[in-house]
Image 1 (cartoon, one colour):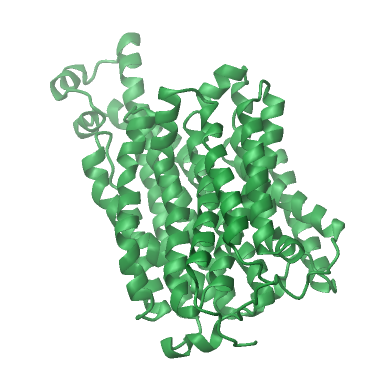
Image 2: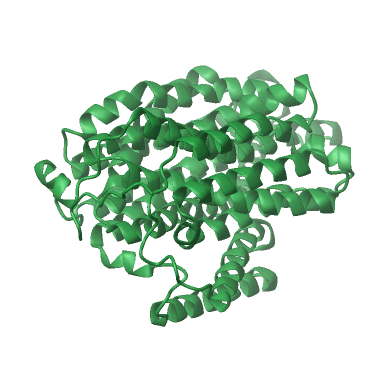
Length: 523
């Protein structure tokens, strides 16, 4: 590896990087703000209930397919023009979404929007190691990390406010001005670094098709598994198609002289472990930002705006922790900080396993603070761990794979969460009914039945009216218990990540400069 030091970043370089972060923030925020207004869009366009999920699935699937292609696209276009092109296409697609009059046109534009947005995320993280010297990478990673994790947190409140104040069209129109600003600003300020030595490689269309089919099948299979069953014929066929196409893609890519995706990044042990940590972090991040609005909406019956206000605590904690994380990241070993981050994040997830039907802002405050503080320590050190040792020609590919693993972790985590909730809720509901029939006063009080009223009914079969009154109480408590199980699931999986850290090769702080990626000359 060439160890030439990257020149000190100028104000112009930092400005260009900020413009890139704005584009990435838009792409991530778009997912959350649209999620809060799906019922509104459904009513406006007359979309069938079972088809509504495709508004999000189309975007996420296209994004997942695009992420690993970032290295190839960077090689073809260069970092600056890849970003400018992607953010421009994202902005145009946002206009198309806002003006859609039919479900079909909306889905087409969402696919275009998702593909463009998918390249923005890894492009920003690869820019950290291509634009900045080692001493500045901690600050740059923090800026990118805050943008990446803050967007899902503020998404519900932004989406709720836009929907209540204006209309669903503005969920997409708000991307126009920042999109134009990011595209023009990045074009004017980013230096055109030579992308890498693979600029001339051709497109392996067969590998591209295999990659697209495998990731699309996985995304749709994971979406359908919780409701249709993991062993249902449709889900089994989708997951089988994923396994077959993914294996074929890997076989073809490893043997290709000009691979579409550089899988040799995984030869570096620290990169492989960093990707595994990114996968587990995705489970926790996506899982927590899914479970909170799920609970607050279905159990507490809050509207989107109130849910966003409650969830803002996590984002504020992340922002306040960011400068501390930067300070420590430059002075404390990556392994130590990673262990601290994942242990703390696991604690924050497990703190939510004791929720009741009355849990609200006050009870959710400290778990959110703990998770918000931990997030930056789960993101910064593993990012440096995974990408900081790669040679320049592998950074863009590595960033794509690293970010893909986080998204895949999120997709699999959400499928496991939904499976846990749907399966456990039925079990808990039946258990609660059995306990009520047996005259368990503690269970009756726990689900909200007045103690004296229940005592009077013991031994007497409930009439139809009483049964209808009790049913929603039973369903609500069963849902709460199953959600707690889901928190337990992702909390335990996050705790297991700590074991992986002990297999990371130690890199002394005073040796990090020696493993820094090579700088690129201006054109």
